[in-house]
Image (cartoon, rainbow, N blue to C red):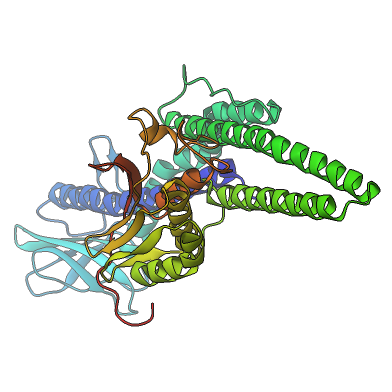
Length: 442
């Protein structure tokens, strides 16, 4: 199970460990430099304390507050290169070197640090094994780093406690969210939150707000649908009763008329249910099909051809006023529903003997115009709401057609609008973000 606290502790501990290793390396380098300088200074002081003439063995010199280490070897050479004095009986000692500091190898290959200086007619040479110097450097480095090694577990404990306290507001927020009921959509309080948590809480509050709007829209849709279905269902019940009475009266003509009315009622109820389902699929959050390249002119031609019989039955001249190729990105089935609703709405409101014109422009516009009564200025936008019809509306419409048109348009990034024509009638326009002229099959 993943733990943010453990990950933070692991990353912080890894950083501290790397920092400790780097500090240890830096301390080691610095300890070697400073200890080497101190030992070189000590060797120079030892050489300066040797008398100008030393003809026999003498004890190691004691300087002011400084005791010569056992590993420091003093040798004195005469002018002929003969060693006349050695303070320690090492098995192998470095030979005579020129004045100054030198790193040399002894006869057995061991490393030595040597300092030589002329004193009178002799050469005083102070030597120290490199192993002894390295051991001293290691002791200095360990003594410096040891406190940090001791403090490392304490730092880990402080980090664990600090991270726990730092993540406490997040745990409180999770507890508050977990204790809420399914219907509680009130925003979380932002007072007293840390700067790192405030963007998260704001995002959660925004999500809760959008969820509340979606739930309210869903409740409104269900209530509107139930209200809209109540009337046709009541009419179907009445028509079924009339059909039963006609059956009992053995009146063939009445029975045929009652059954025909019942079938018309069933068709109206079926269309209402289909429109409700279409509207539900176009609501925000519904499944969105993958966009395709769609030729609106081809859809317009098919819609006009399919509605030709209905237009002829109403004595309305339906045709394409403009047929320019226009390609949009979207769902061909949904766009066909959009155009069918616009054409059906225009045919139902067009008086007999008038015309309905459908236009597709390369500028991204789809227009359906009729010569009907039009709408009042207040109704031009209101009729896009569910179950809203104009005051001059006739027929058996459900008031869902234009609501479906607007939902489909919005899901395609388009804008649907209505306007009264000069001279009478209504102009319905849907403006799309065009992809360009369509060529061939999408």
